Image 1 (cartoon, rainbow, N blue to C red):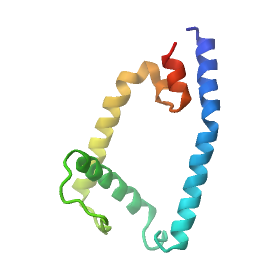
Image 2: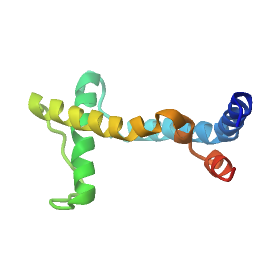
Image 3: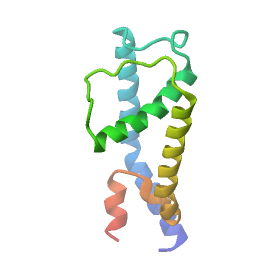
Length: 125
């Protein structure tokens, strides 16, 4: 496949997925608005952005672990106001390692990371 054909194929795949990106963004906006109106979203004064990010990093690994080892499951996981630095750094290191392990083999074929109708289109060639 020539570079020009490849670029056209990627552009075509992205264009076909535009409506899905739009629907995902619209759904996110409506969800955040509804949750805010219901009082489920804390303000940035109560819960600063950096604390949200650090909490997300740690709990990403917690949820990933529970996927493979489902113990101590609960409907509601309360927010922990202070996470130890070692947990945040450890979780960030694990996420970085997993990301590198997944992306490095795909370095030559990064266009396969797009989702939607383009994957079947590209793989059928």
